[in-house]
Length: 215
Ligand code: AR6
Image (cartoon, rainbow, N blue to C red; front, side, top):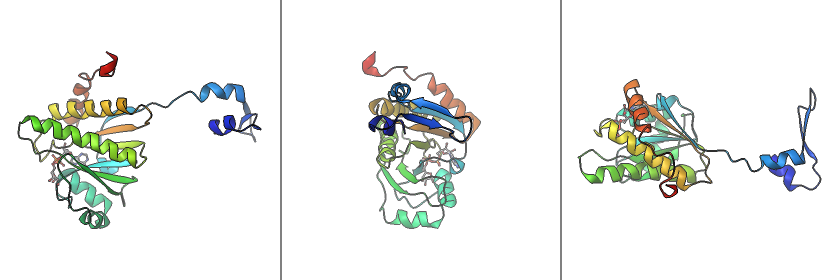
């Protein structure tokens, strides 16, 4: 609305609440507002991701994309059988990559399915986990999502130690937000237990406050 007023020649300002105690904001007052940019934020929460409302819900899937246990099973149950039908057409997904489907009965616009690494202790694990978060953020951004909910990828059946995985998750998403300064994304990390949430809170303290190139 602010942009419309400033772009138009004939508009004097915005009248808020015209039928009650009205407030008039003249053009001059609106101009500084047009420079205000909303900022992206990261939230940590203890939550069942299937109950969280977000534009994109990320699923920690397996390479078949045909469902499974853990958060994958919960998402398929909550979304309904149409999700599996759509997933069949995707022909699987490589580890570290991400594919998008509809969200069906979930309170979301889409589901981003990504496949985390099965923890082996090798250096490759961290790279692949990083790719999961990066590619999921890219996919959500391409779908015009402004809120994204992540589970703790790979830290259940795939055995990734949560203290290490939480640091990678937070660092990768923070870097993505820094690399996309024009994006406006709220990112929710949905931890399934208090203990997991504490791991994420602890991992927060390892995050740098400023982007690497600004140091
Ligand atoms: N909401 C949020 N987090 C959850 C939920 C939920 N409803 N349910 C479980 N978690 P996992 P992975 C947490 O095993 O390690 C599946 O069978 C869970 O506590 O779901 O990437 C797939 O089909 C843990 O912290 O995913 C694959 O075969 C985190 O989600 C395989 O498991 C991830 O645990 C993928 O393993």
